[in-house]
Length: 489
Ligand code: BGC
Image (cartoon, rainbow, N blue to C red):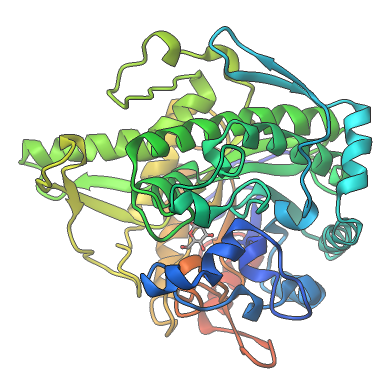
């Protein structure tokens, strides 16, 4: 793709303007389309509700994109989009176990899964297990997306895992057998590689732009360290590091499968351009003159922004998170490639030292937001320029801003948010020379915000819970004007 030079307030030629969604958050809402995933079990669990870990809202009351994708694409197009980010639901495609499909698994000297060979026979075997109606529907969705003039960006893992691979309740309660503990088990890597190979095989003619893992950090942190919000609700540093490790390895395994199985170009980006999607926060010390705050900030930056990208790009698996990569933590042979970096940017975090009496590295907290959204995220547009600069200067890959948006039910902050963040991108491109290739706003419409449910509203459009009618908010007009003109006002 040719990206021209920028002039004044313009974005580069060929810039992708899109909205971002994920399957679990938008698909359900019309018809009977439950997905049989760990997230489904998690948000319906009575004990999780009793503990206040989930809202009690149900994804089956969502926007219903599974049936309403045509009008939704039309709407996105009207808002000036030439691209649309969506995810495939692994659990929907493979509702029954794929563990019986034979593949060759190669291990390195330490026993790590290094390479998985999925051959034609395995693809045939997967073809017998896949839900054919789901394949047909996703093909219909992707075909329509293209027909309406938008480049689909497809995320392979945006969080739901098939229940046969992860029983989140039993894992939460410490009684799940090996093989049912999701990303804690190595088996998840093998099954994930099979699913990615099959997805690339069956959708590759329609998709050129693939994202592997959405946010290693959030899945690991909220699921395994913070205890509560995300399945399986653990509070365990070892489990957290295992999840970080396996998810980072999963990127490389997925990268290889997509490159191997998607040989068809749907457009100029083809046959496949494969990246990882990282959530990057802008961290700064609450008190820059406090050494303890500065150290806590550096640790947050290292563990939450840098760790998994170091694993993906360098093969650094610093399992004790001591900042040193030694011995069996050095795994450069597991580096498989990454064509671009997806940046999900939401907030600044002002980090301060807070003694908690446990592992001193976790002696930190965050100062309250100076410019809070509905859910307290600290709006800080300049941070987006900073994280794009940082990611590019460190890893030298083109960047897509794959998510950026604000929880703002009254739509009173979104216009300012949009203008500030798009200005930050424009300056990263024009002044700092960062190749930012596109911007995807989170999200097209209000949707199922995981454990918080429908109370939290990130959409450019609202959705009537009964009729499912979408209504663009005032901020949607601002987005449209910029996207259509490919320049700031
Ligand atoms: C996730 C989305 C989520 C958004 C807003 C991102 O971390 O990828 O699924 O809805 O944040 O919280």
